[in-house]
Length: 124
Image 1 (cartoon, rainbow, N blue to C red):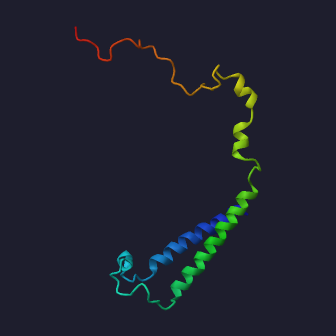
Image 2: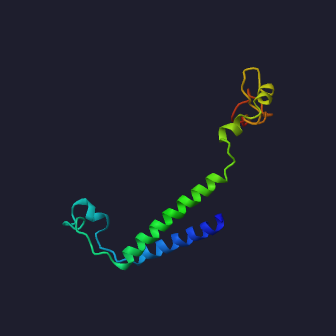
Image 3: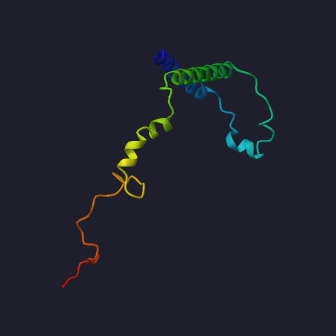
């Protein structure tokens, strides 16, 4: 069921992109919003077939998005990510250092370089 809704969702997305690209541009773009449009923003154009199809595809796209969200929520494991992080709390305390911090895997491996050695070798 989830795969069917996902395929429909992807087809709707592609159709929505295609219909939006097919529509005629008003030529104003972002410049019409800056006040230089001469009232072009306030005029309402007639609803064309492509405009109605765009609204229909957008509503269907939103419906499939909500459906996929509900399906994903039902398939969730039922536990929080925080519950998964805090499991095994006693084991983590036993393996930690004396200061209570678990540094296994966090620090780089010990280096074989002498910390007192000069950073630049001398050219003697």
